[in-house]
Amino acid sequence: MPVMRRRDFLIAGAVLGAAGLGLGGCSSYGGSAQESAGGEAGRHWGFVVDVEAFREKADLDAICEACHSAHNVPRIDNPKEEIKWIWGEPFEETFAEYANEHMGESLRDASVPVMCNHCEEPPCVRVCPTRATFKRADGIVEMDYHRCIGCRFCMAACPYGARSLNFSDPVDYLETVNSEYPVRTRGVIEKCMMCADRIDKGLMPLCAEASNGTILFGDLNDPDSEVSRALEESFAVRRRASLGTGPSVYYIVKGGEQRA
Image: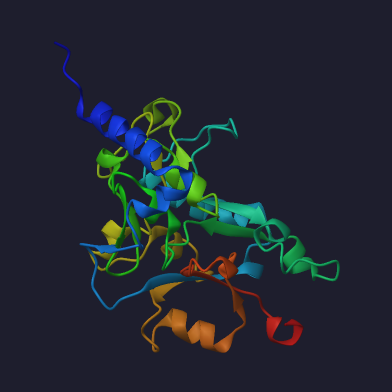
């Protein structure tokens, strides 16, 4: 008698659950975006990005390399299968609702860093049938790779395109492997984790550390934190905030006080 593997069992359960609930019922797997164990309650970690500091691709390359090399993110040239934790997009695509023909050159040419927004109300958490995606008490949206069955419900739910599926074995696309961070497997989803492992040790996320001050990190609940002070002093926007997801990544647009 054949033995069903744990992964096959989880996939079968997810398929049966989807069939019983229908597409509209996907959000009921986890109800609201419940907080899970991990992280310090009362904190709300977030980023503040200086958009106009990223005028050229090179301004972002070093940051992406620091993140991707440390987290064993494979480099796949095929855009249909590429894996991305942090990457650059034109301002007009990142903030289509703010783009206009009179934008300054510094905005028009900016390569805006984008990543998982670690939303206050993350739709990815609500639709995950195995709870592989969860929100910590400090606001970080994290993943348990061992529970991921690759159903891609989270990819469909994320309005920011922040998740990638490993269509192939990622090891085949890694020049070097960081033994201190787990390598994913074929069929598993992955994304930015806000360097939760570093934060738990009192360290900054690698993107902020490598940015020379162009990406700030801190506690959005602390009025005296660097991110809170930056937001108080500058005009900032969030990606597709009108959807009600509550992104934890803010983008400073200098001079926006006069343009808004």
